[in-house]
Image 1: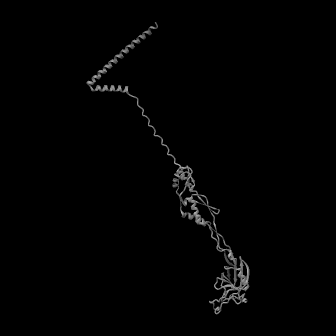
Image 2: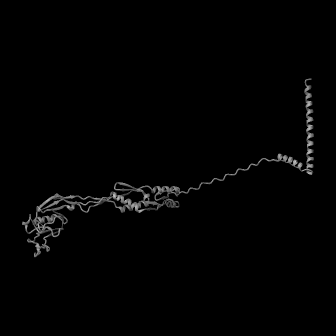
Image 3: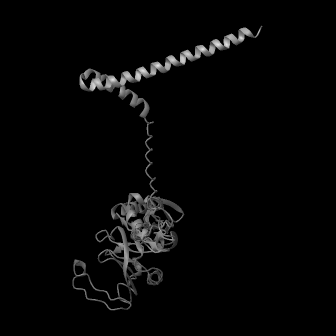
Length: 373
């Protein structure tokens, strides 16, 4: 009894399902027939129906035939460019001694320029000076590197350097002025009636022409080895030896003093010129020396008119020795009148005793300074 309602419900369900299925089939058949009829009629009589049908057909076609979108292939990226091959200078190549083998040209230019810009040392005696090459010269570095690129391995390519002569000479002239000092000659003066000798001083100089050539050569060779020079000695023209013997003649005392190296050596009595024929004052020098001279009367003087030359001998007014000065007509000599010694009795010359004149003759030289005071 309990299962009866369930069976009834199942039967009712089947019936309901059958009725629903029949209604659906009938509706489908009717719809198909209507569509066909409509289509035929529309083709003959109305444009509106055709449009409607076309729309329906198009919709059905679009729904059933639409294809999925086609994916476009992605474009391939362009192939990466290969970096240009780096050009290097052959191994072992140098430019003016600078190693550039294996370097790129730009690196080689930098290396050669840096080497050329290094200062050049110049050593004068023990003093070091430096010269900036870039201020006095220009190097054609790029041209040399270009030649190095095609040079065989192990080649030393020369570097053309244009040296400006004017600034180099000016720089060397400044060095010369710094280290050169002129020589000073010895000098002789009379101080307090006695000779005073100032000794000579040795000078120094720099050979400017030689140094200029060496600096230019170093710049052109691109070498930075120090250029070493030494100052040269400049000898004075007059040394203290020139005043080894000095004669001082005092007219008021009628005395002759011989000095050796600035010290009094000997003193002699003499006769000097009369008031009317004075022995000339000043600084003089012995210019000639004669043994056993002839005496010739001075024709320009009135006192000698009518006198004749006297040969060597005991009657010769000059005695046996003559030491002529650069004062015209004046000299130191012996005499045939020894009684005049110690007086102002001569005609301008300086008379000595014959033995004294012979001794003095042997101890002075041509060039000896003679002061007459």
